[in-house]
Image (cartoon, rainbow, N blue to C red):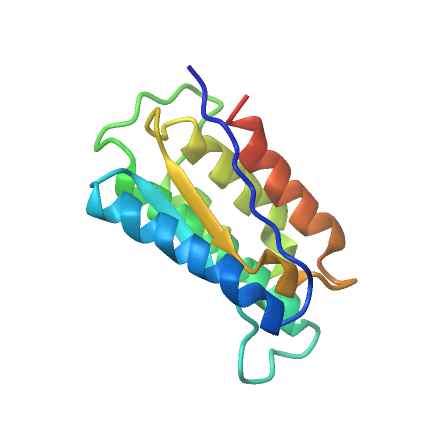
Length: 152
């Protein structure tokens, strides 16, 4: 049996997201209390100015995917039965340079790690809407597509 996606969305706007954030926090806390596998990230824009050539939204999007990748490596089995198409070597992780230039590589690593996710995995991503920006449009869509593809 494959996972099912539950998405909770609230109206846009900072003050209106508090109830959705509380629901997200509740699901994350409940899963942890029950010792269920969970990956989670609560999105926010960085407080300090990003490096030149990047936007706060793109920097926060990179933080999101790297956070999810790190959490997936922590819950992955100690020994992975990888075929030649599933390279999870240290060299591959070194290609992730912290910018959107390595986005496709980060998505590929995420996709590979999701193959080894447990049958039940809670994934809570709160405030994804704060990352919406012209600089992140296609990137957010590709990220969500990879996540959803592993639930079908």
